[in-house]
Image (cartoon, rainbow, N blue to C red; front, side):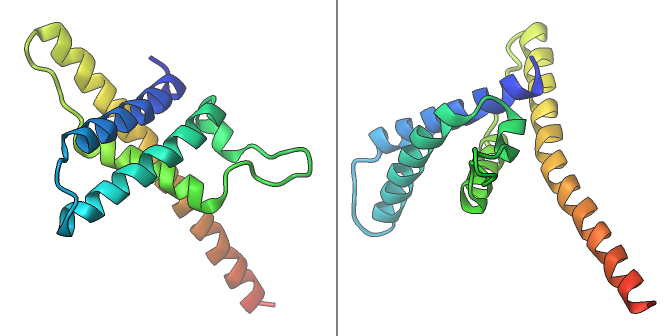
Length: 137
């Protein structure tokens, strides 16, 4: 499975998990009300964003006038969903084959998430270098 396929599959699986949680939650009072609202909003957002995703690189694509297709908030939301899915990812140990496959998937998912943060650190390092060169002039 490619990173792009796993990226989209994971977000779809997370959406499915949210829908299952929403269906099982019969109470809508107190803290449950907050959970229900989060599930509804997250499902609605994923329903809007998932059709626009073709892979990881589509998060960085621009429209005809050069504007990013995904806003910073949408980008952050999708990464948050990916992280949440990773935290509850189930490694299937019923058979050796299933264990190996799901461990590889989870490892690849962790790599995908790490790459988003690795890019942030590279950007910060670049900004730090710019500030240092400005100070030295």
